[in-house]
Image 1 (cartoon, rainbow, N blue to C red):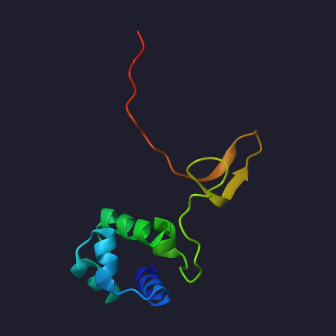
Image 2: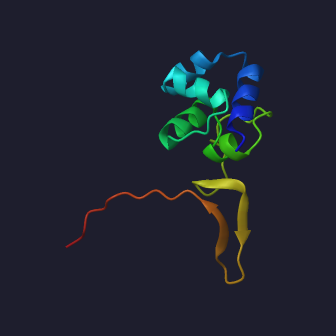
Length: 110
């Protein structure tokens, strides 16, 4: 996990304090401070909130490199919910890759 390094890089590059990022992400300041001290994050909702506040994906925050300023991911692949570069055509006309799946209830039709 690169959370500590990535957060330190992001804060330095953007001239932010841990407290200001915690406010922006609406997570406890102590949580962010403990991650910066090297504690392994245990709350996925807090991680997601911080990733959103930095304009990066959860994967980038945990495993990636936040040195580049990529901004928010509104320009994703032409397919909603796909991470760019991770869509690989399969042999039978299907696609293999990393997808974001959203489930929502639907009304049954009579």
